[in-house]
Image (cartoon, rainbow, N blue to C red; front, side, top):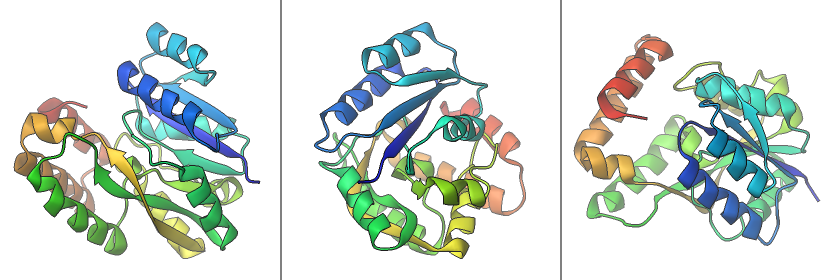
Length: 229
């Protein structure tokens, strides 16, 4: 049986983190270890981690660096990267185990908006699935990877945004990087707050600017100043 290390970057999202840690504890197959990398150096976050028997690590506020820090501490066979506000399907560890046993080096889950759902979600979900097939699945889709492969190909980029892009490109060149049919549920709060069309357009514009050479640091500054984290 494979051992899974769950790595969760967090920044002032303790309430969602507590819900995720509770979900992880209730899974039929539990992860071997859970590592939370806290960019806020928050005492409430540390207390929540202690409550759910997760390892707490303080870090600088940069998501890519948080993920690298967590991966450096992890000892499991497979690294599973989750956002703090993720919601899980019924048995995700079994789905990942099957993929690895079938020769995959890693993969990602199907993007699905969590409740409450609005009609734009029905249009966006298949569009995101298509984008992932032709482009890059982002970190909110529960990327997982065999630990030796992750370190061999260099891990996440130490960037505050788009940190998974070079990782996914390298993984696809290295071996089989599979999309799973099982969903991971993404919190729709940012789309609800900003408006579904506005938020989607802003995300696409960030991606286009990144492809055109704007640095992740500059894009992160625009992202947080205009839309919040």
